[in-house]
Length: 463
Ligand code: SF4
Image 1 (cartoon, rainbow, N blue to C red):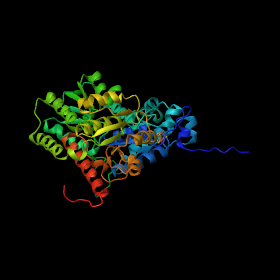
Image 2: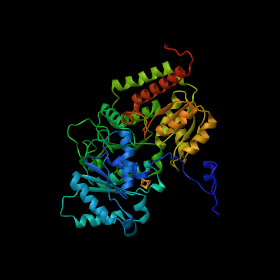
Image 3: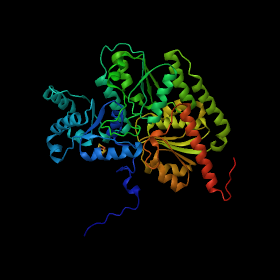
Image 4: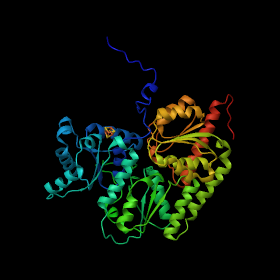
């Protein structure tokens, strides 16, 4: 007689002996690498693995950025899982170079090729030898097993691979500043470039997908969209005056910034994502120290206007309880921003692990935080919802995956970061700088007011 398996609740799967992930609060590792590779001029991301991985990532990324997202693939099948994917990788690289005219191909591995143990470095060396008589593009590769990391690991790994494999020895002094902004929005990258320019310095932003993933409408389709960090600029990064790397949680990793410092002696300044006043002030202080210049009057006015708006609007949000979730560096920045405006973060959660998140939140928030929130790493949305429910939050702050919980609890969701799949314009959301803080604050206050109006029997039309 067949035994029937009765599952009363998801808890049956999450006992001590077995842990299942339910709606992960992180994304696939090579997905982050493909976004990073999109930020190099003339580059095409290439997945060494099955076709399905590339299709999933294309669909996922397009839904947020609303731009074409070509990802080449070595399209491995069952036979390759046994005999290895080398021949497919070589053939796919040639196709990508010839059909797209790519100047750079960014190869990221997938779960399949990591599991079968393909030696991509060796295969690429063979490829260069076999096809050395052809005009080959640069090929950069990064190892991105998704079972041991998150999309942020893939993103930072790809940026480091670009610096390691493309920067040249003996680059002359450029007078530039390298900026590794982390996985921020195209609008954030544009604003960061504007801030650097206001201090009279040209940044080499790695990666820069501000145009490739948020470009203008064109009459002619471009196989590879215009924009991205030029290859010549990447090669010259060793000649920069300094590097700035944004993200407190990446201190546990070797990065492009540490690589440029150890190989070429480019001094590295690591800062938190510049969200809210104090973290943005830190970026401005760093730029002042590097350039010897004061910020422009326009940027100073933005800071002043933001503070004025806090005076006007803090009463609408002060004391509200927020649950913050998402990428590790983003949640640190958001927690600092919320604490500054008087919102009480009660739970801060990320799907990443071993990021020292609690210590980074203490450092970013200082004494602005009224009380330390619960901080959780390596959690999924099952864990977040279970713990958050008991905390009776008034707000959710994170990407669009929190939409169901927000609806169930009838509370507003301030959409930030990646992915935003259920709203329009995710790629144009601004988070950084005083201008980004202003945008977040205005959106938040208006969401709270809208809910009050909607919930009120009589409503009101005048603040
Ligand atoms: S199999 Fe691995 S690499 Fe492919 S989509 Fe799934 S998590 Fe990503």
